Image (cartoon, rainbow, N blue to C red; front, side):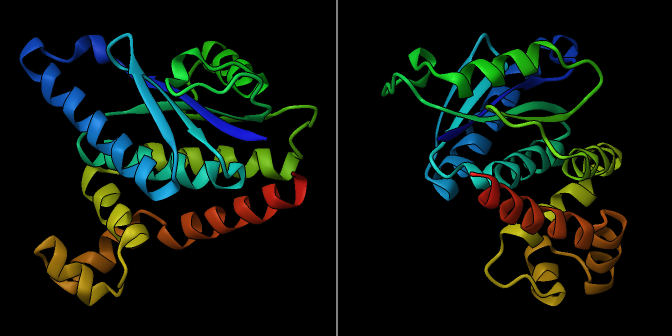
Length: 204
């Protein structure tokens, strides 16, 4: 069993031509970070569309949230369809890989309307509690400002994430870091990440 994230940028067609290269660079750098952190593979296709393959499927929500926050901190909105399933035909270039994880993830992205985050699991109906948690986290992510997303990204990825240490990293005051993190509901997001990993591990 693997996890696949299929996603694309929201309203990318409205990005001015002169900013498009900067957007692609940011997307590539964000995906490289996630790939390194989670030992994942990724590809970018059709300009602003992406796929990520994770060999540890219980980490898929964690990876998707970090990817969303990094892009949001750069003022780009991302929607992501997460899926857990089988890998039938592994390939070095994941664009040509096949399996239910890829099918479910791609289908989920095609069926998304206003959502930012969905999760489908092969032969498993998502429990109502888990689905509700995803929906609530999605609202928190969508309402986050750039600065809040940036602070939360650093909080979730720093080796030392004390507010004082983050203040040095972000070149601001400890009070401002605390304010940004509280506005980003950082403790709820962190609890959801831990909850998703524990829950998915129990399902798989």
